[in-house]
Image (cartoon, rainbow, N blue to C red; front, side):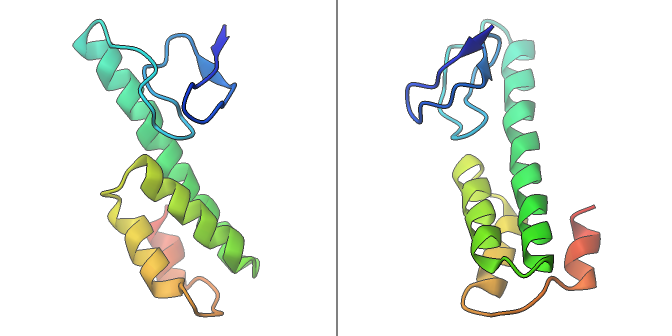
Length: 106
């Protein structure tokens, strides 16, 4: 069963989610440590996806989409060092992802 996030109106959240996987907004209180940990992991996993997606966009010459993916990753996890670093490195530059960037994302 799915739930709609009240913050961003994302419709693909599960009833079991405690946080929206799109914006990170708290959907419901966790009833146990296990549930809280599982919800946090799901948000973290989506952050990693946005970082990697940004690298794919950059590699294909779609810098604006890459920057948007990394900004989304930072909205989900403001402490994500990789997204911060990539945003800083590629903001205002027309470059392709380096092999080092691609290796780091694996």
